Image (cartoon, rainbow, N blue to C red; front, side):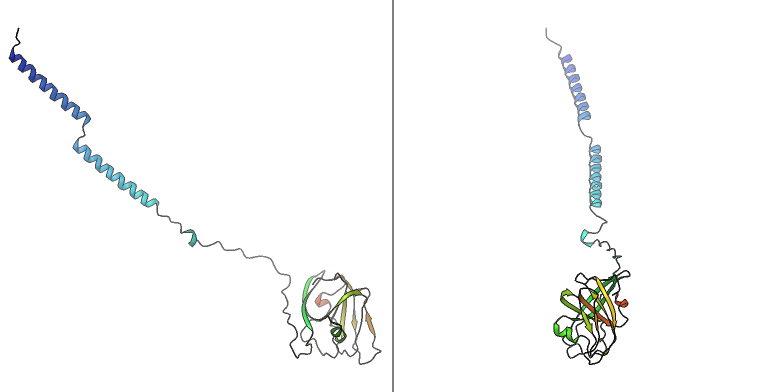
Length: 223
């Protein structure tokens, strides 16, 4: 039995239409609409631009580089020095005390410590000379005699015209005794002024000036 060709043609046409319809539907589902693609591209471009701008913004720091950040100011020290160091220069060549030395000493008593600039008599010749035939101390606070041993000492004022006071200290710097001394001419009968205990150091000052340098009972020569 042969099929009717007209029906075949009609069926073929219907089949083709159905296939076209299915293709359109598939394309509608899976394909991308040109306008939507353009919109997506624009959105992507905008997002990229925004991201780039955001990245650029976060890369700029408002904090200066470490090398340019000023250091924190140092807090000044609140420590208060006890007494400013004395300027203590040795006697000038050709002066009355040329050949003697000079040093800064520190004497401590109940009122604190005191720095003084004094002449030094360390050698036997300097100790024999002392303040003989001097009219003043040339601005020094006194003269200190530094002996190599600790023993009882005795001073006199032969050929010394300046009234003096003397303080003795032992080998550890502890105060031993003190006394005032009267000027005496060129006489072997000038009285002596001994220490009241073993002493290694003796400090002579203008009479009455021992308290000014803190050389009083209970004091200590610490330098």
